[in-house]
Length: 483
Image 1 (cartoon, rainbow, N blue to C red):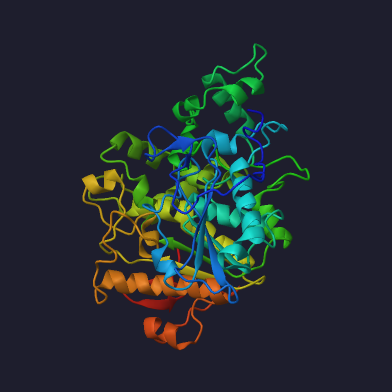
Image 2: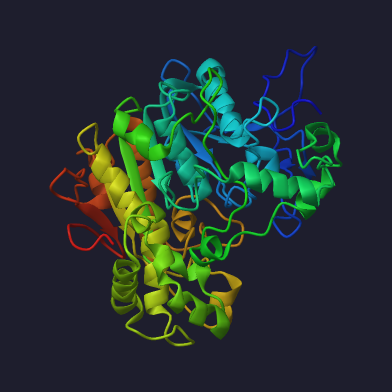
């Protein structure tokens, strides 16, 4: 209908009492190869979980979860991301559905498709929390937003956007950043919209997009055609997501009227305390089993890993020299192959996550406390992509850290004995995250924190010290080689 691709509209009042005491399986439309579930376009729901007893005279801190999934998939289903461990620490947990893929991020630069509808869905959820969470025993003045992957990048978009300023007092970004190459489009998004329109048979004879056709098209087609052909450069860089947050025309309704980097430099963004971090082997998800053609192509196109804004200012000789340096540093002048993926994994970990995370953190270090972490614990709560499993590749993959603070139906987390390392790592991470939600500091000096973390203190970074917490079977501070 007419609201497709546009900002969400708050629900009106209803008559009578609705029974909303159990989780309703409602997921937003996504790709046919993504999660299984009940999908509908009418999907903008919020879930609120509280401890069994709530004292309304002492409202609890709120943790507002934004799911990941590459802006093409994702779910609030508690089977994937339950809140039990957080609730045990006296937290109100909120999760929000938001539109993904073309339905959430198509940007034609017009009033009918201005872009970033999915981020505006999240923003509406945050506004709802400010108005209503006190009725559930939550404190609207103690809201922490947190997310993983695309959800983490979303957290940073809220941190940067004036539209979300004041809606939260803390932010946690697990493996994802608005500065990441895969997370934002400054240009080219209208061309992608036109490609999508062609696939949907919604292009006029003059080549323009028939927006009415897109607004009324059968929603099942959006699952079939959510991916469009992208350039070789985009695919090699690991940023092959067709519909992501993008630059909007400047208006009163725009969520992102400037680039993330420009917004970051304006010092008009949120300045609330921030936790940011990455996993040791994020690049595992990019491994392609025995695809020698891809790896040979990669080695010949390493210049793609030089940011285009820098590349455009260099001569071909300088570019070749820089590409050779990347080859030597990461791939050791070899072609990645079975048994020789370490350099490849490190290249993608740095390019897609670690470098831009450090860049953002350093840029914000003089505006407010930023706590950096590196999650390096390679335990049994493993989340590996199919390709990695088929080749017996291990490592701390993308998304693995959330298995140490959210309940997951495929893990026996509660059945793990308290003296087992996995449970110790989980307890420490849960304690630091919930401490942060309560106080803005992950390691306050109270007895319950010391009982779990001992004497460990997590220090924020400074402009001249990129210090960070290294989380393994123990936890300690480091200043060496965040990336």
